[in-house]
Image (cartoon, rainbow, N blue to C red; front, side, top):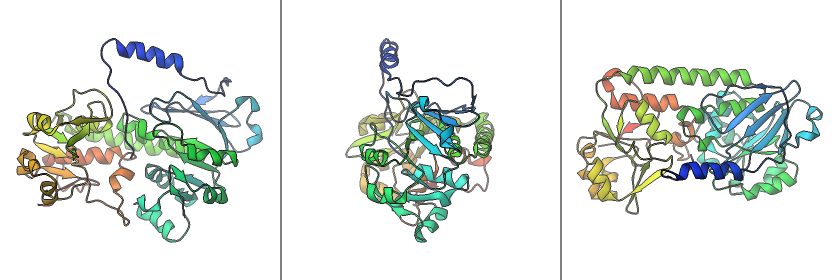
Length: 385
């Protein structure tokens, strides 16, 4: 997963800033409106839209990266000749896609759930991929190493001649992709990581489904995730207990933990936990002093996701102060650092955005163990004593 960026604004400023952002938002170069069409139902994600027309589809990405001031429009068609020139799309992609390059591990689960992982031909830094299914393809030499995302090996990528490259931007467009575009390779932006709602991230499977002409399948997969998520949420909603929760850990004397509007905080809330920083605003990370965290959360019932620490010894070796927290003393610290792929990548970072129902189930079982007897977690595990 990538970092998230959001700023807090107070009182009058959101109204003024919102007006300015709307005023300054660049009209896409492809501002020609296409009448008609059937819009795909998008219920949780806010960063993309899909509209189907008889001979082509349009994917509109409205938030490719934080504070993006550009809307991207991509045309998908079985016959590119059916895409009107007046659309002036940022990229035109022939579907169904036969070979693809993706650049984030969070894209891998979508390909696998759609059953199209065999179309993946290249990826930057293959060691980051943890999925056993995709690693078998890597071991068989069917997926090429493309270096680093920010400095992707353009020569190798161009030689692969992919139907499309799915990338992401952290602080704007990835400049390394310009040469691919000049070589005639369609490049599209995926903004799944910018979404605020856990289910919003997972809904981007509909984005990938469109490239494979598998919209119905994508809709069905997402509906099952929503149903499972809702069932777990309802199961714990009436629990009498709402344990207090602390999250994160220190890096260079600064304690980082999710802000109150983040997807991580939303998951704790839906697991019927009392996140002690739920009233903070924003979707990124808080940066707090140790003293502040001790003052607020020293007696928290549970401590979730202390970075990638796997044991109490390693946690205490990093800072003896950690042992002052009640959750540490009571062995109520749970992390995802022990769940790794064959080359060391953390499975949580790769799979959790696509399976928020599994993350919620893990958290619900941690906070309300009596409701989930014999539950086997997907990501979280108690730290080793």
